[in-house]
Length: 197
Image 1 (cartoon, rainbow, N blue to C red):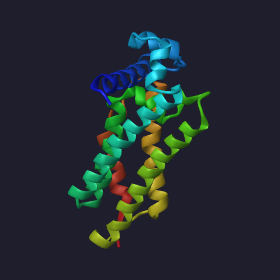
Image 2: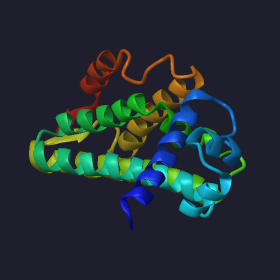
Image 3: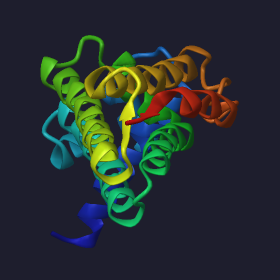
Image 4: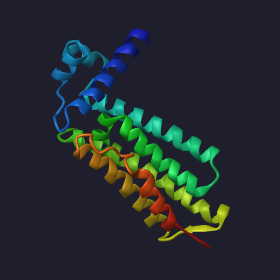
């Protein structure tokens, strides 16, 4: 594959992410996207066979970025509470830096798109929740700690918090940032999350 082709694909995905950010609530058409990139609609389809494939390209970027970093956190950090905080902060920080991607994470931009895309977004959050469960399970073995409400309810509660903060970010048209007051919120959460065995 030539560099020019890779560059054009990346350019299309970046333009799509920018449009998702700059037009909250608006449906993205391939005609508008082609105009933004400065190519014809036919040229878009030479790089991506459908708009769904373009959205998939962005979802792959989300998955690769988040899960590569989560794996690094798990390998490099042994303290359970630090791991949980770092994973949640990572997801919220990623969301804040990529507002357009948040419209995908909340499925806001996927209305009228193929069901496969919504399933894929659901799987992103399911995978994060699974990672949190794994970290919480290890708390007992490694540090003699257990979640105050059980592993599954605790992981689900944490996912609800980050999903809620991302949704709030989208609903506020990116004015209320996910990292705003996060440290204070985490401090209260951390005090009540784990119990000594």
